[in-house]
Image (cartoon, rainbow, N blue to C red; front, side):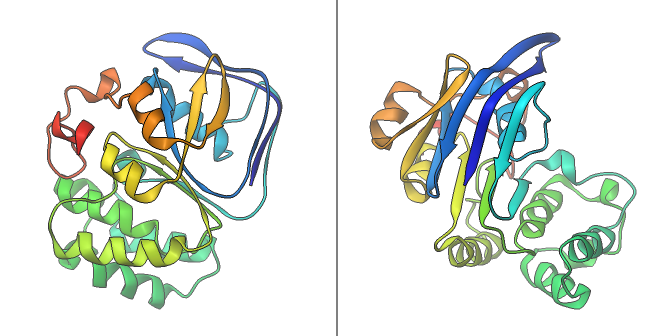
Amino acid sequence: MIDLLAVSAEAEVFGRTVSLFEEADFHLPPGRYALLSRTPEYHKSIVDVLAGLRKPSRGRVAITGAISWPIGRSTLVRGKSTGLDLVNLVADLYDLDRGYAGDLVTMMVSRPDYMAEPLERWPPPARQEFTFALGLIPEFDIYVIDAPIPYEESRFTRLWQALFEERLVGKTLILSSLRQKQMLDYCAKGLIYERATLSIDHDLEQCIERFPARPAREMLAVTSGVGGYDDSEVLF
């Protein structure tokens, strides 16, 4: 459960400051939601506010239960740390056994031989798999995903989707994705951002027609593939 209490928040988008929320009061009950709007370039910042990562300029965001970080963001997995370093960090943060966490991720990813290497040396597909695998180490009450859910035909995709669906039973999901099929597969309602506030719409199919998925401007140059985007992702 997430409550926005008289929240005002701003964000830097394409070099200019925009108002995300203006004295917004909003209650998000448990459920599975697809984030939709006519301004996908705002979604990252909206997700950050909902997840408690971006402090409002006024008001308060109250979160009931354990909430994930925005799973799928490749920017969270980079630098000189090794895969094992990050696995151990997540395990320590959530008071989990390091051995369990390492075994889970190693079992899932296609290239476990990279785990002891600095992440900056990993190829993008391996980093993307690792990014999603990290998000399944802890169990959360609210899952926030800010990327297309793994969809390519692979062993990793099958394992990840099976475990994620098991984790998701009885939990809340906020999904920001270009893939409309994933919205329909995983979500039941639309979380609509419009006019600096949020609302809930129970007719998800109609919501998708009203707010067709399109990439934010900064995504247009990203090459399609694992973690990439292409025109087909908007429809399928």
